[in-house]
Length: 227
Image (cartoon, rainbow, N blue to C red; front, top):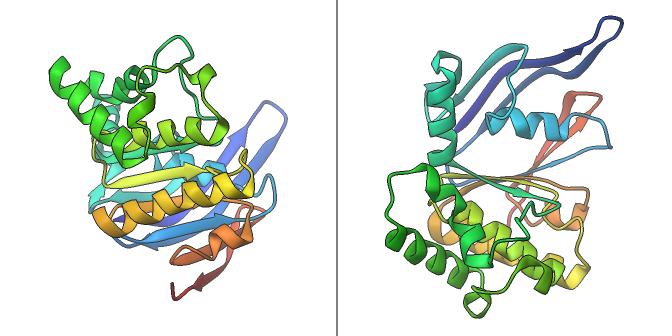
């Protein structure tokens, strides 16, 4: 599903050059649940952003679903990202002035989907995460765990093949974190959604199929789990 070959990312200013990713090669199968760990500043989020087409590698090749991304123009990349990839962020990124249902609908606004169909799909996504009774609530009326459930519903409303999750349980207590992991595990099992999750929590990482570790921008290990 995702193939990275010799990926490097360099950030340059007039006086400083920083190597954020160093020769990363990684293959992620369709339906795999992969976790990424490493110390702060080691390149985890940079790697996730490249997989999500939010950033470009300085050198190397990225393919998603056997399509080489460097051949795409900006408009094609935006459309591809909207249709293929769902994002979950640690800080939720919900719009406080919109009710839950409208927040979940947002990715569908960029597709040729009628208002009625958008609301149906958003309601179905909220039902999957157990928030059917919160559709007309606002984010400020929700707990942290409920906000993250809304963020997951928004990520899956367009039925993406890939979900990229950046510390999805990082702001939650252990009980809420386990509930979020159970939702992600169910999406992976039932829908064969490919999930890549950045985490600092070893226990959460061990619930995935495979754990890769980064250090100073380099991939230093890969461990497969039997779950």
